Length: 408
Ligand code: SF4
Ligand code: SF4
Image (cartoon, rainbow, N blue to C red; front, side, top):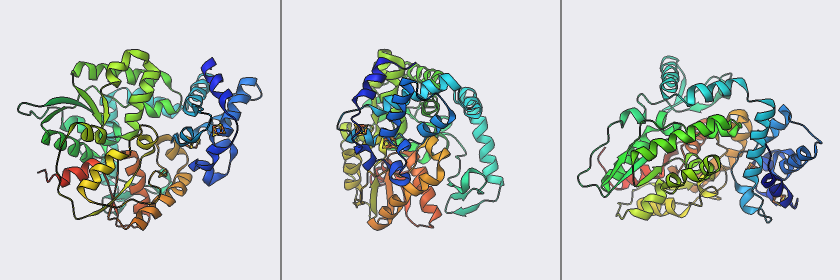
């Protein structure tokens, strides 16, 4: 149901076109229906009844990466993210959600045991099918997900590995770790580093077992029912864990928990959201340390959902400057082309957007590119593997762990 608040936001747009100059999708396509201004015009047309809810409209809405850049340069202060999310919800109300995503969201995302089973089956497939490799990356056949390079699924999920809390003698504080799907099932090395670093600072880390997906894939397709269910479960699980802070190492999950949960659940989740920190934000605020500077040239890619979504860019750089031979790349905040639903639906476009990023990484002369989002890591690793590049991608917290010389 579209609201007055939605109409107010639409009316704010002065049609100046400034969003066109920075939108990664518009820069590649030049298509006015694929940029904030064009989609706001579509919203206007929907309001006046000039257009109706169709699959074509959905296509234009889902061609947005939700990178949030446009909202930050908009001179009229239009809350574009709010406009597009309301349209996606409304569209789902009118013409429904595609069948396969609906099954995945409602059956698997809300039931951890079933999701585990699905991923276990996929990991067996990954092991038995002889796929072309580049390092640990595996190349999928073209007809299967467009010939992507993907990392292996973990043999043991983070939730299973850390079901028992590592006890710390006289801990300074107790934090809850919101893991997120990519870290739980693929990038378990990021979780290892988070826990090792926090334990090093005498902080006890609890990984609450009932936690589920943050809900962003469901929310992106307008499945508000599933998104609400997931949000309610996560808030409840972390409230029961009774922790001082809640940390996460995924820019997209972090932004969803901080910004979308209050919109979905209202004030009742403020106790939860007030405790949330991205791991780099938390380290720089609460931990004092001296790290050995690693003899590695490291550059940094700003995830959109950290840089634009949470205003976090100094903290990861402070960590990397102290831990390595840090080398800034050109336009580090430029989008890598990653991003869940967009990447799945527009893989060719995502790769085109990412071309600038891989060139900037190579040009920086770094051996390693660090970032703060497993989604960006997935995209950057795919792009680098496709080029046969020797540059490695990692998470900022893994660099700090190595610089602190922590035993594994
Ligand atoms: S920058 Fe803002 S005001 Fe200008 S066209 Fe884009 S959304 Fe509208
Ligand atoms: S959120 Fe990003 S992709 Fe979407 S319109 Fe704004 S700049 Fe373009």
